[in-house]
Amino acid sequence: MSFVYKADPARGLIWQRAFAERRPDLPFHLWPETGDPAKVRFLCAWMPPEDIPGTFPNLEILFSVGAGVDQLPLDSLPPGLPVVRMIEDGLTQGMVEYCLAAVLALHRDLPLYRQRQAAGLWQPEPVRLARGRSVGVMGLGVLGQAVLAALRPLGFRLHGWNRSPRAIEGVTVHRRLDDMLPEVEILVCLLPLTEATRGILDARLLARLPPGACLVNTGRGGHLVEADLLAALDSGHLAAAVLDVAEPEPLPPGHPFWTHPRIWLTPHIASMTQPETAVEAVLANLERHARGEALLGLVERGRGY
Ligand code: NDP
Ligand code: OXD
Image (cartoon, rainbow, N blue to C red; front, side):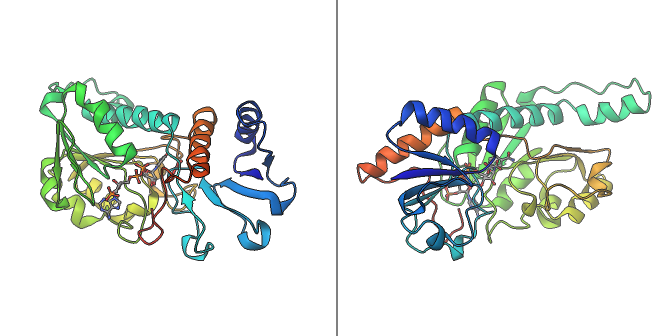
């Protein structure tokens, strides 16, 4: 029985060391080295090999190295193969830090002052405090809930929207997205990319936000209709956007987002799976699997996440 890691090789070396320490009984292979393919029971990958049954005929679990699984060909994977997305403390902490930074930057008008600096303008606006500002999160899963929990002590008025009902202390959770949008000055998208959420950040949604609202997209580039964002910014309806994700990635040269004065762009670094904590999470799931218990983060293929 063995484990194969097929993702960023530099971080793979940290996985390899951690496995050697924590599970010396479980041989660990760094792709493209796999040992005897018939012995491979567990694969952790961003993108698995195309022909899984032909490559690893006895695979028992496919772990996604990331929280998102939209990169995986879910429909063409062997039907009975469990797919598990990444839930681990380091990844969550990274997202909390990024979203706090983005929300606070937008709340304190930093994109506006950056523009004024470039224009040589010393021009203050009244200072508003967090208790007078509302933030809404789309997608109240592991990451959305952690971001809300971190924003709460700052005093923001918090809103959330999710597919299934949620009760979160200090957060007004809306069943209908249309009910939340007019209440929200800073909107954070932390949805998975699925058939139901592709293109959800479109003209109709943006128009329902109050004038001067801002957007943070740390979900996936496919959530955003780029032309609709540009139109909303250029009409003045939206004040600014912080975008960590794009479609395609990297964003092509010459794309208007690169130079837009009210778009802050980062190269999909809002968070990253941290090898040390990820290994702990995967090992805990392997123990659950050995005991015949349900795996944490099991993907429901039919819904796409
Ligand atoms: P989870 O699966 O824990 O949470 C997703 C949440 O979205 C769930 O609560 C789910 O609702 C809700 N949801 C799904 N579909 C819909 C829908 N159609 N309408 C309303 N709500 C919906 O995922 P995570 O929180 O771990 O991660 C979220 C996403 O963040 C990832 O899929 C990935 O795209 C992105 N990400 C980005 C990173 C970056 O660096 N930019 C890093 C890591 C993740 P329900 O409770 O009903 O299931
Ligand atoms: C992820 C990501 O899904 O890094 O984990 O985007």
